[in-house]
Image (cartoon, rainbow over all chains, first blue to last red; front, side, top):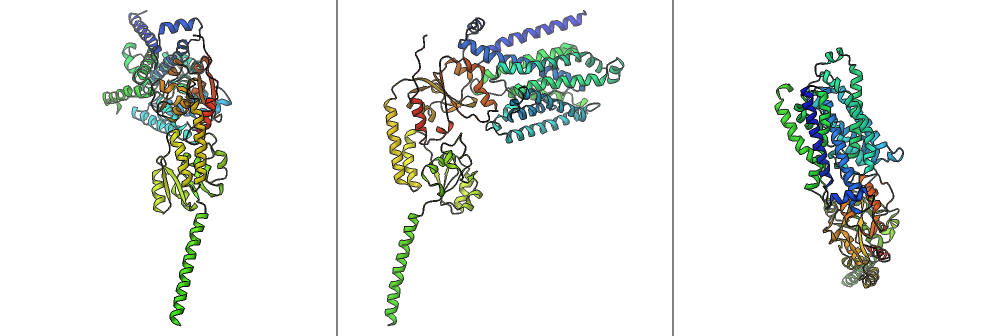
Length: 334
Length: 286
């Protein structure tokens, strides 16, 4: 093992430690005072005490989802940035998150989960896939940064409008008021069922993405070079698109469209991964988990009784960051 | 002869005029008011007091079984969305509106010469009983209004006599955790039936959403949920099926139709009677 990769591994372990600490902190966040020690004791001794119920049924699923959704958004952002060779790519900016939310909304409010219990994540994955394909059609190969962003704006606008339309015509009286949840994202009131629902799809998606790390490294040297190194671009791209659709679709189905995580995390961690797009994938996964855990804690500290949507915090961080990126890379955007 | 003729025809004309006026007055009293309502809560009072044939139009929620207490009486009555152009062709004699209904419709209707009464809806049970009598008179049924008001007052007094029985802690939990704390109708209904309101005890003032954790940290003896079973495809309604609620210790759950207490109407006395007839909390060992 080279010095460089040892150093990189050290950083990765450090990040994992940070995530573990944040996870424990997340278990202590909530509107009621809970003694974590007592609650853990109760939970493991199998008692159904109130503290144990709160910990096991409310806080644990929420923290797990923050971890899973954060990792997904981070790794997908890194993968899209590597694949499109574009620093401004991330699932929310280029419209994949809204595309996934559209599928989830249609399946949920029109009762499809009555017919097929996996309908919501499944439809979200399909519509995430369609959004990703659209991005490729519009701005896939040799497209300038501007073209990609414009394509993302178009797909985001279309997705958002169709979500509002679907909710407007949904037969349920609460549908329209849940528009904000779908467009901003939230982890409130989730249960362990949501974890079970999303995890299998996310795992497969992560595997597909992590298998592409070598291709992404080669791709940074140019498409022809990658091809000459033996990678089949068609196969690799399909694997990446499937991977992104699977994990973003599943994540959005249980948490709504959370923005900017996939944009911020890869940029912050790129130096630690020595600018290798492939290596960046695992860093971005861990970093994304940390960011969303922290944002979810912030949401609960700032507003424990009146729910504040998670997307508000990530947008407050990501929006200015996005502006900074545009300004600092202005020359290379022409 | 000319003068006499004129005098008698003048007299004749006077008599005819007076007779016509008497007949007009009489028929105006006999002719019932044709009433329209553009608000769900005023719909209930219209359905209570006005004959089916004289109701011109009700709000579009009037025949919704979940939200309208007297929905069965609202069959075959034209519905409106509070727009002036829906009501003007129907030529109502009186339109009931409230401060919460679309303001511009009220202005437009008044401009067109339609009589619109902007009603101040009652907020407490006492106000509701007094209001019942007043609106009965407004709608042309003063005797009926007085009678209903007296009956409601008698039922309420009977309930208040039993109020001192401490039945336990209750909570109304609607989709999204929506509930009412201090100074709400829900709170008054619970306390009149002898139950303490968990939302008020946790400090909630007015209506709001109670986090699931707060419910679990002080579990109520009685959980009151909405009994609507139609279309539960929403995140708000899924909250009521959250796994955490399955482990609530030792409590009763009852389903009360939302329409009993969505508006301050006579039907809320039914809700209080139902709540007061429930068994008190069983003594739990610590």
